[in-house]
Length: 86
Image 1 (cartoon, one colour):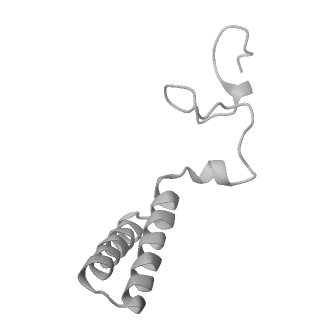
Image 2 (cartoon, helix red, strand yellow):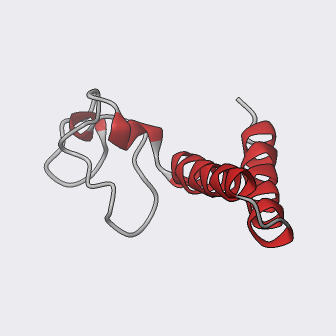
Image 3 (cartoon, one colour):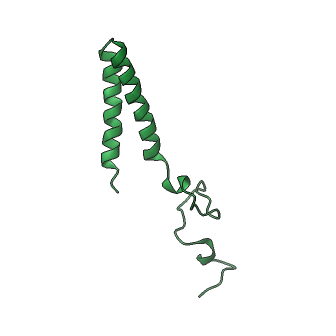
């Protein structure tokens, strides 16, 4: 799935929120501006978060915060000392 459309929507919410908050001085536009800025923060959070961390199917043996590449194979199938070779 492409991230361009959600990213464009998030940036549009930021722009609309700033314009509504700064450009106009009525209560309705301020409320709409706050809603747009909230949508920007929430949408940005979902753009940068790793979907695997949100799911229940995350592999507990893989440390996602360790430096380096994330292994694509399960831990027991990796090569190295002490591992069975097929």
